[in-house]
Length: 159
Image (cartoon, rainbow, N blue to C red; front, side, top):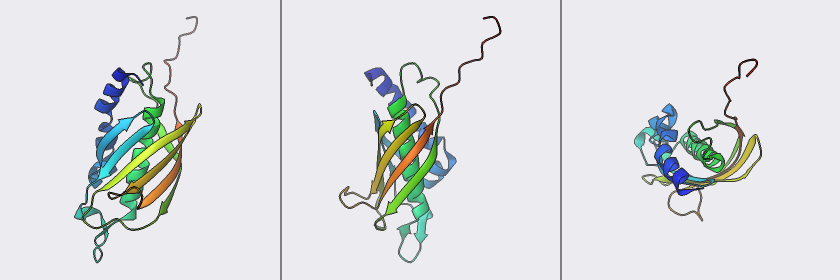
């Protein structure tokens, strides 16, 4: 990825959270983006507690975090100079999550995703969520995304 595209991706990437009402409501934050990789965080917030007795973050918030960071990893894997102004959309086709343990109450959850393979229409992503130690994950996901091709303007007959 050229430096120009990387700079533009860093400028555009926060909108991948801020532009999605659910991510914005949960408090998900953009952290980093690189070619085929992305990192988001979910700061601890009492509004996303799933069990008041244990103060553990709800699994749905972790699911949203993993899904959104995976989507940005796909976009960063497929962006080019030609399509950065009108990037192709992505849609989750399949998302499988293995929950390994609850997040520690009071800790920020960090999610990193790696888009390790793309075809013309499908992207494959692995992601991990942890609260400070990648070797002790909260959850790991495997996902496939559909890559929508940017649509060309229809040509007039005879042109």
